[in-house]
Length: 413
Image (tube, rainbow, N blue to C red; front, side):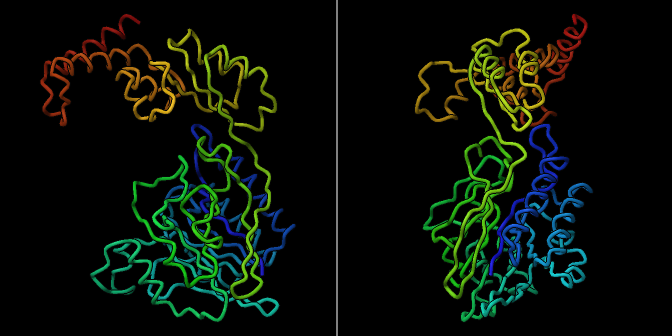
C-alpha cells in the first residue's frame, strides 16, 4: 500500500506582498494531482495546517476543495487533521458526508481518535488521526477526564496509550506537534510560529506506530527513526528555506514493520533567491539574472550609507520578482562568527527602525516618520533612556513637542 504524506499547506498564505493563493498554491495543487496520476497512491495524509488562518478566505477554501475533490475523483482516500492554524470545527464541517467519498477529516479531539483501516494485497494499514493537542484539551471531560496532565509530552503519551491499537497490523499516526528525538529539536525555518520549547513531545511517545506522519515544522526531515517524519511545507514560505528540498514524501507499506520512505520530485512555480551586496553589486547581479518569472528575490543592501533612489533602481532592474528588500550594515567589518543578535544590537535605534520599516514596507520611512522617531529618541535621552510603559504617563508637554515637530516637518515638505 502506498500513500503520500503532506502537511502545512497553509492555503491563503502571504509571502511578503505576494498572495500565494492566487497562483503558486494553485499551481502546486495541479502538479500534486499530476503526481498522484503518476505514482498512484492509495491514500494521501494531510498532517495539519491546511489553512494559514483559523478563518480562511473563500479562495483558500476553494483551493482545498479542488485538492480533495481531485483526489476523491481518482479513488484516493484522504485523511486530514487540523493543525494549530486551523479551526477544527470549520475544517471538519460535513465530515460525515465527506467520509462516504473516502475523505476523512478529524474534528475536535476525543478519547478515541478517528481511525480507518484500509487493506490491499493482504496488507492492513490503520490510519489514526490525532488533531493538534495541548494538555488542557486532553484533560477535559469527554477525552481523558483527569486533572494531573501538565505537559504536552504527558498528554500525548496518555492519550495514545488509551487507543485500541491492533499491534498485529501496520499503524500510521497522523499528528501535528513539536516533536524531539532525545531532546534534540527539529530543524526549524523562519515561516513557523514556534515559541521556544512550547509543546515539545519526545518521539518515543509514538513507538506503537509503524509510521508517524508529522506536520508543524516546515523543513522535511526525519525525527529519530526513519519512519517518524515531517513532510515539510509544500512551497517556499520563507527565505530561510532556500536550499531545502520541497519534494513529496511517498511511503510504501509492504507489511508490518516493513515501511519504506522515498522522496519524489514535484515542480515548483517559483524558487527563492537571495542577493546581498552593495547597490552597484546588486544591480549588476540583477541585470544578469535569468528566468525572472520563476523566482522571488530578496535583496540585502550592505551600503553603509543608502545611495539616492536605491529602492527605485533595484525595482527597475529586478521587476516584479523582487518581493523584499532588507538592509544590513556591517559596522565593524569583523562580524564573522558573531551572533546575529549582537550585530543587530550594534545598530542605533534609528537604524533599527529604518531596517524594520524597510523590511515591512519595501521603502524607507519618509521625513514625517523620521521626525517622529527623532523626537521620541530625544525624549528618551532626556529621561535617561527610561521608556514610558503606559501612554497615560507621558507628560502633555512631551506629546505636544512630538506633534509640533511632525507638523513642522509636514509644512516644510
